[in-house]
Length: 314
Image (cartoon, rainbow, N blue to C red):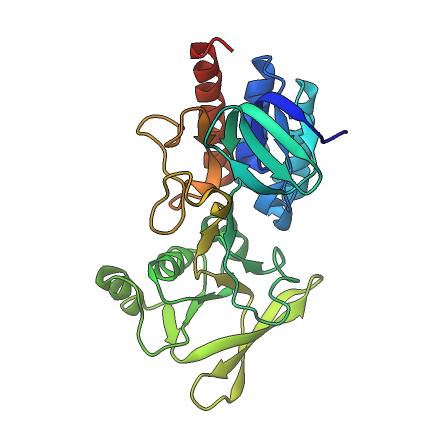
């Protein structure tokens, strides 16, 4: 499609569950939305293999397949899809202006569903085995490793919470931390340190994930942060729990954010600090971060945008 001088009533940034659900709802409302894919078409679910907890798929569904189905549904109702990466946004006046690598876009209302990127430790094979034993979401993938040896890397509240959660599946759980004390809150530390299933490996850093896509994760090569000695830890899964970075830098100085960069929205509304700009998905949710909650917030943003446009007689 031509990408120059495009004006739309609604533009949706992001093509994960939040963005695509927003597209389905705004398209069915005859708003003819433009959805801009961004650098990772389909969002984080495209890096996931089997999704078992999305309603309507009793046998599970592959993450990329789910995203393709959602996009097909969105385009069926009249969503236009552009593959581009937005590099600049001007929300100071309407119509809002977005500049991409392939063209310029304007819109009356904007739905931001740009998601959040998990932080990685940089270990060898970490990215290659993502979805094959390496995960960044215990709630999503923990059930795949029943009665298996699971390792969690991190030392904050997220790591301790994920480690505690995963003990309901693991036969043994290792919490790997590169320091000699946890950064987590006292109550979270207590839960971890008193759990008989959890063994904390202090002053250790994961330098390589062992295994293949065929066999999955088979172990971890650890480095002692003091002696630099390497050791092999047999394990069936690695959960990386060192936090996420919301993809919100495009709106720094324009939209209200919390101290970690997550976009804020009004109470009982998906509207941001700028009228006509709405937010959904992981770029505003640092608590649940599930495909279904992202989709639900995409629905809310779409309905809010539709009602706002009506109030503007557009």
